[in-house]
Length: 362
Ligand code: CU
Ligand code: CU
Image (spheres, protein in one colour):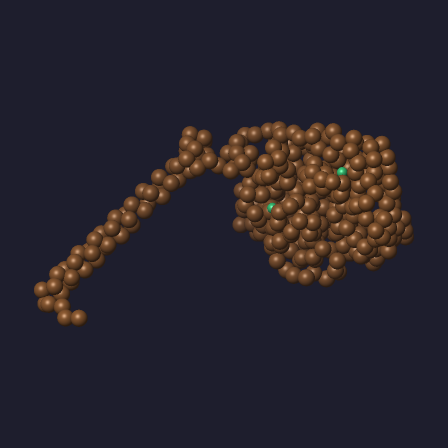
């Protein structure tokens, strides 16, 4: 195509103008970036203080971050994260009784109560523990108004699977099976609608130790779940061991250098991602191995999946443990390990600043 010299010049002029305009806009943008950032920050602060609701905070933000000072969960209401110790090696039979009730007032988050269905009056139910090859004998007593069951994961006969035989109100049934294999397992009610029976609180963890046991360590049992209080299909609170933020209000104390074994299980209909801060853990998937599968700091657990996390903290201080799904964390699935220096007197437990000073001093 033939283009005249004058038209070429005109296009060139237009091009130069365009470039100049672009440079000017870019510089204006650069100069104002700081101002815009400041505006964003002030808007965020406004939102935090409730003055502006252009972008409403999440439910979790309201519950935890933006509503301080809120009510704290009383210490006596905290679910003890310590599982029962391993059973004696010659015990052979492991007997439990689980009583179901449907009228437990359960403080699912500080100041937020729900009526839960529970095994032995807690959500989650108690941690059951046995040893590979031993007999598990678990008696279910139904004090509710609806039929219930207990379904255990693991290898056992169909009639002990807790699916077919419903235990009527006022009834009882004893499940018996040989514990195998070793690992971490969920147990939960399997009455229909199962979603409702589990959601309302009828679940717990069962630990089956290997025949020869695992090396002794400080142990924690942590069930991840969630609660949809208004039944709108979206969880309102997520929790370690049934109560949102309980280990934020009451951190779990560890000692630097202490070996920790954390049994973790997800019993909710969403994927979870347990994560510990400032550390890595040896991951034993499903608890069904003696040697770790992986060294990592986060693991994905689909519904009913579980794992053993083994770790130790080298440095004192507060470390968050959370679900890495940020909404789950903000809605309650977080807590703190307060790792203290074993050389420092318990009464003079270091604060955040003191820990830093102590480190400088070393
Ligand atoms: Cu049930
Ligand atoms: Cu989660």
